[in-house]
Image 1 (tube, rainbow, N blue to C red):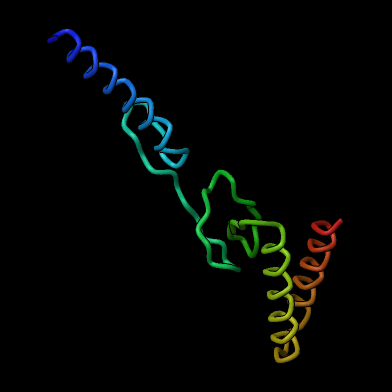
Image 2 (cartoon, rainbow, N blue to C red; image 1 turned 60 degrees about the horizontal axis):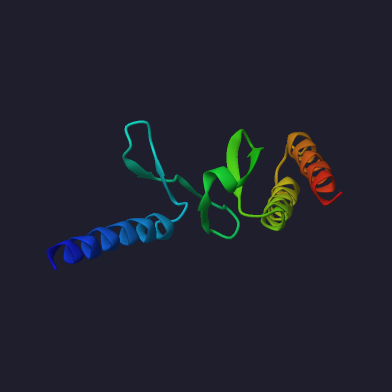
Length: 114
């Protein structure tokens, strides 16, 4: 009777360990010391959602690294920036630098869509 009870406890422990391992998901990973640490999340500047950094699309824009959840958000963000730059260019006295940046963004959009 006692051995049967011990057997059920051991089986229950093993089953709960396996279920815990399967349920904890990919968002936690083990570092060198064996402790779990959360995965780093970054915010998409266009749709404002948080995504895992390792699965995000990374582009350098205006000297700053930007992370996007999809190519669609990247494209919309670049289009939004172009509209803002075009508006600012029409109001600014020095259009040359803004024109060059707008041209750069248009070329980048063409590369993404092709």
